[in-house]
Image (cartoon, rainbow, N blue to C red; front, side):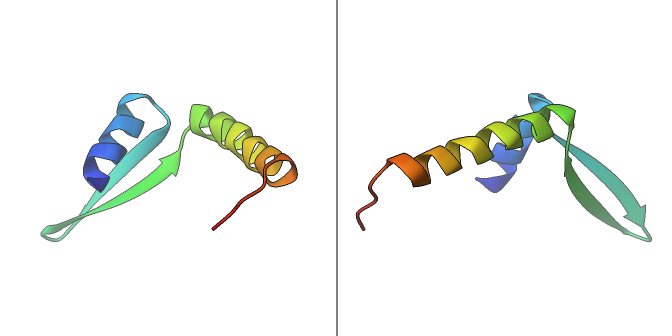
Length: 58
């Protein structure tokens, strides 16, 4: 499930995956792209709006 989500984010250029081969293993590093950083700011604003305007019941 996580791999599918990461693949979707990569395909939409929100996240990039940098792979490094060390001996016989591959290490992956995931980073936000410029589009991802822009989206992060929008999500952060939405979270702030939700905390200010919505009543949460657990």
